[in-house]
Length: 397
Image (cartoon, rainbow, N blue to C red):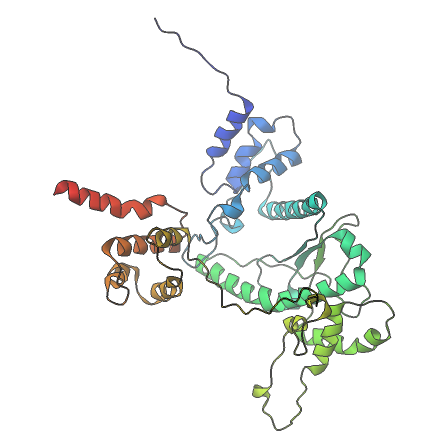
């Protein structure tokens, strides 16, 4: 006679089983719907359910190893909202694509605000959504700077951040949006349209727009057209000179920078030979960095120059390199290889005299490269495949 026992699942095991069943791409419309209807959410309001679901589904995404995944080679990340079908629920109200994007952004501002309160830190966030904008003044930027710091030093910090927004727009956002547009074309998806916001004010004293909500910390702003930015810095020089209050170091450097733009000491010098300055030069002028970036003399640090960073191709390639103790100096060569030789020939190239890798190394490294370029997550079996092959050969012999 055998006895059987039954156990009632606890809420924690129920929650775990429900979240595990969502699949690898968890932060999706279907994933949110599943958690929205799960047992742990009963008794909470609709907004509270949505917030809890988003928190669970984005947990640890910054270390999940899928940063370089794309749905199509050279396209967009599989989590991109444009790929996700909107769920149809009659009994409960769910978020649309636009609402989910906005709610997730609100979560970012909640998290960074709370972090500043928890550890007493200071934070700066500048971001923009993917759009078809082609010039800085047409891009809407979401901005956060620790509210208390901005309030207590509004002119210094406000001016510095305004110049940072302009530099970010021209140096980072525009090149990114150009790449984003190409990725949308590869995926055959429509490029979103967004409208500009209130522009930064270089003349001051209010350099940044007010927060979106009077009691909030989120600021929505746009940069200026590059020519307008330079012209406004040039015209603001009298105000900078006459101001009795401490002003932004970036604005002060910017005025000097703008004055030198277009200056040609020798009229016969071709324009192509004149150094073209950029907004980022405000923070690294020819005369040395501005006051906010100057090293304190008592620290007496030596200036170091760094080579360009080595960016990993992906977690599987890193694992293969580590397994065979192959140096990081192979990374630049691997990038050249994948862009000049088709994948079916990688293994033979690795076995050539130029690379001089063993059969195991060539096999594992070529498969790891292909796996990473396909946007797949880390797979430890990739680096074990040669062990299986060799083991099978030995047993057969």
